Length: 287
Ligand code: GUN
Image 1 (cartoon, helix red, strand yellow):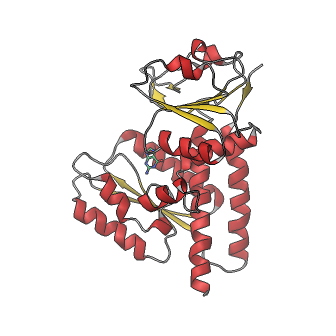
Image 2 (cartoon, helix red, strand yellow; image 1 turned 60 degrees about the vertical axis):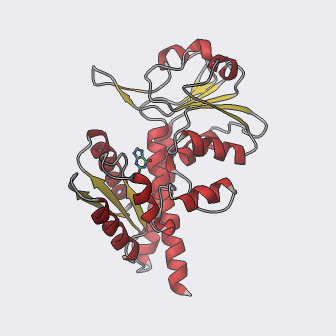
C-alpha cells in the first residue's frame, strides 16, 4: 500500500491556523498583514500562480495586492517599484513572480528586496542565513516539502535522500534544509552519470526537474518516499508531475500527487512567511 501525501489537507491546516491568528489581530484592532506580489508581463503559468496566491490570502483574511506591470518595464523602473514597497509600512511580504522577461535581470531585482520582506527566501542574505542554519526566510517550496514530510512523520535524520534537480528555487535549497535536518543528501542533475545508482538506494527522492513521468518504478525501491515537485502541462491540458504516478502508486511507500501535493504547500508556506514577516515588523515598531 502506498500512502498519498495530501498537500491540500496539510496546507489547509496551516491556513486555518493563520486565519485564526489574523482574526485575533482584527479583534484587537491591529493592522492586517499584507503580501504584495509583483507580476511583470503575462506569462500564462505566472498568471495562474499569482491568482492562486491572491485567493489564498483572501481565504485567510490577509491583505493581498497584485501589482501588474507591463512587460516593457525597465530594470530601473522595476527596482524603483520594489524600493517603494520596501518603504511602505503596510507591506510585510514582497514577492516578484519569476520568470521575468529575458531583458530583466532577476538577481538584481531580488537583491533590491528588503531581506525582512523577502518572503520568497531568495535574497542572498536569506540564502546565506539558511546555509548557516540561522533564522531567516526559507524558500516556500522547500519549506513546504519539509512540512509535508513532517506531517507524515517521515524520519529524516541519518536517512539517504536524493534530490534530482539543482535549481536555486527548489533543488539547492531543499537539499540544504534536508542537510540541516541531518539527512545524508545527494544532489543529482542532468549530468549525473548513473542516476539509478543513487535513487535505488534512497529512502526519500525529491524530483524537481520539470520532465513529465521522468521518475519511474525502476529508479526506486519499494520503501521509497517520492516527493514530486514537477508541474508539467501535457498536450491534452492535464497537469502531471515529474514522477510516473500511476506506476509508482501501489509500489512505493509514500508519494505526493500532482496536483494536490507540493503545490498547495508552497502557497501555505508563503502565507506563513508573510505572517512571520508581519510579527517581526510589528515587534520592531513597538521598540
Ligand atoms: N515562479 C515559480 N515558482 C516561484 C516561486 O517560488 N517564487 C517566485 N518568485 N516565482 C516563482
